Image (tube, rainbow, N blue to C red; front, top):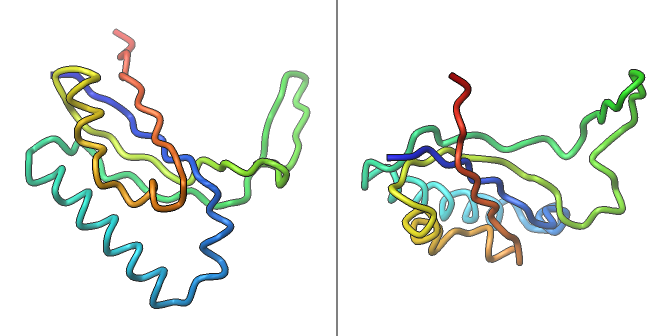
Amino acid sequence: MKDFMLIYRADYSSMIDRSPEEREAMTKRYMDWINNIAGKDKLVDMGNRLALTGKVVSAGNVITNGPYTEVKEFIGGYSMIKAESYEEAVELLKGSPVFELNGKIEVREISYIK
């Protein structure tokens, strides 16, 4: 069994214009989806949302504000799952509400440092 990180990418700015009820419904759909993965004993860590603000640090200790506002596709959060293969990991993504935001989920296998 391998561990995979799911990185959620979408234009989350559209969520600002939604009513509290719509945002709550989206959160419920996410929780239902992630709990389905947990029910299959494939969830390692539910993860968290990431704030829309941050800092980008470059060589020479150059610090800029980020993520950049002109970028339409923010990394909005992450989760950790376990699966036998990329194919199985991708299968677990079906029904994710991030796709309702025209988003994408990047799937990356964890390569542990030994």
